Image (cartoon, rainbow, N blue to C red):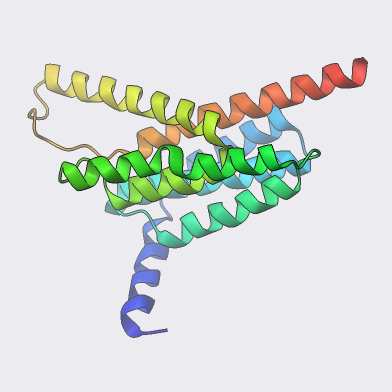
Length: 198
C-alpha cells in the first residue's frame, strides 16, 4: 500500500466517527431490529443502514464519502442475494440492474453538467442499487431527491443560499434509501407472515 493510498484510507476512517454517526447509527439499528426482527435479513438490513449512516455522517462532517464503505455495501449485497430463500436469475438481474439504473444516468448527467453530481453520490447509488435492487433504488433515489429539493427551496425562501449554491446530496439520498429499505423489509415480513398463515 502506497503512502498516498494509506493516508487517504486514514482520512476516510477519521471522517466517519462523529456524534451524528453514533446517534443515527443507534437509531437505524434499533429500527431495523424492530421492523425486521433479529433474523439474518434483519442483521443484514441493520448493517446496510449503519453503512449508509456512515456515508451521510462522513459527507456532513468532511464532504467525502469513503470508497471502502461502498465496497462493504457491495459485499453485503452478495450476502443479501445469497441469503434470499428463492435465488433465481430474475432476482440476480434485479440487483445487477439496480446497480446501474440510477448510477449510470447520474454519471452521464455529471459528465454533461459539471458538478451536477459528485463521485460519492454516484458510487452510493451504484452500491446501494446492488443491495436493494432496481425498483427499490429508484424509489429511494426519488424520495431522496424530493427531500433535497424541499430543503433547497426552504433555504432559498429564507435567503440562506443563492440559486447556484450547492448542497451536500448524500444525506438526502441516504434518507430516501433508509426509508425505502425499511419499507421493503416490512413488506417482505408481511408477505412471509401471510404465506405461513396460508
